[in-house]
Image 1 (cartoon, rainbow, N blue to C red):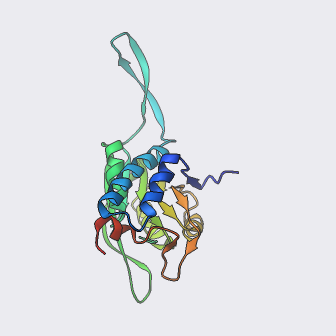
Image 2 (tube, rainbow, N blue to C red):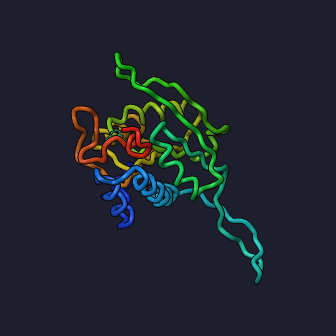
Image 3 (cartoon, protein in one colour):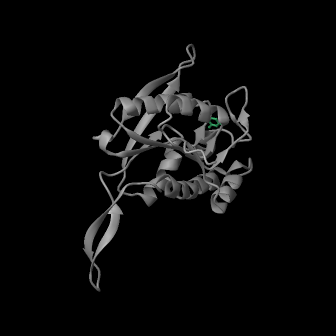
Length: 211
Ligand code: URA
């Protein structure tokens, strides 16, 4: 039975592009381009259940009641820094979306995520909020980011990632069972350094060429 909390987008184009991204020989430029393309396909899936209304329009032939998105503009929230890679492609598909950023770093003593930046659109409680981060690994930063979004008023949140580890999915499900996750793949496990296996390495380094 499908898990309502986790959607794996098994579309052939998504899976093919993801395999290219995983390859260690894929260059920064190609990785970035693929991420942009795949994020548009994932955006299509994560927005599938958006509430709709209808509005009266006039075609060259006649008037009609035409479907339209209901309510306030979507809020896309990038979890820095790798979230920005998913954000760019999504904005091409949803150009009127409002955008927020959450910055977290890991305290080396407590190992807990600490906020260093938080800026989100106003009236978050009236918007569908899509938090984006390519890698759902331990889930610590994703859970903390969603805690912050809820504190800021968000009530209707979805989480979009490229790759998820079972550990991260379980942690999110426990902390935020009301937040559905959409991902391109559920990988095997985390290694001792918290990297997803088989994964694709450090998503931020690969998209920004920092290693
Ligand atoms: N973050 C990454 O960029 N890669 C992983 O595998 C895990 C977390």
